[in-house]
Length: 129
Image 1: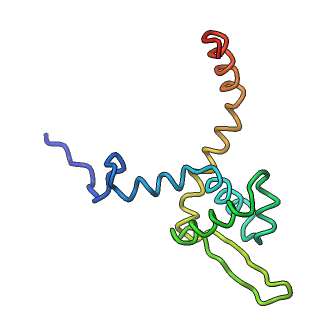
Image 2: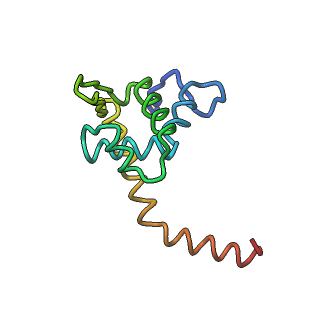
Image 3: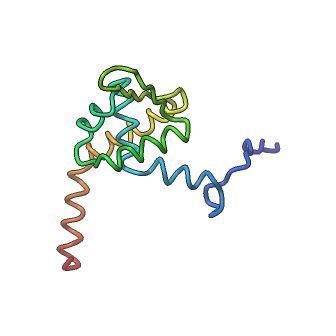
């Protein structure tokens, strides 16, 4: 009995020149992950709401992250002609397809942080670090 080959696609993130590696770099960024999860949990948010929700992010970094997410097709930006002008961000269907993975990663980090802290402390005690 012969096995059926896996479906092939033209991208291989193990290849240094593959564009999917750049996408993985972007997705793996902490600000990207937090923005996607915040928009997924809270729905459409204004820039100021996102800024307040994601503690520690600078305005410059949030702006850059949102621009990159919009460029990659993961987030939409809607400007409302009000006074002052309102800018809302929301996940696209493509961004929504990423939400579940990033939400699980965030929850895993929160759930296992104590164990990681213990492992770090034990390592540092052994190595004098």
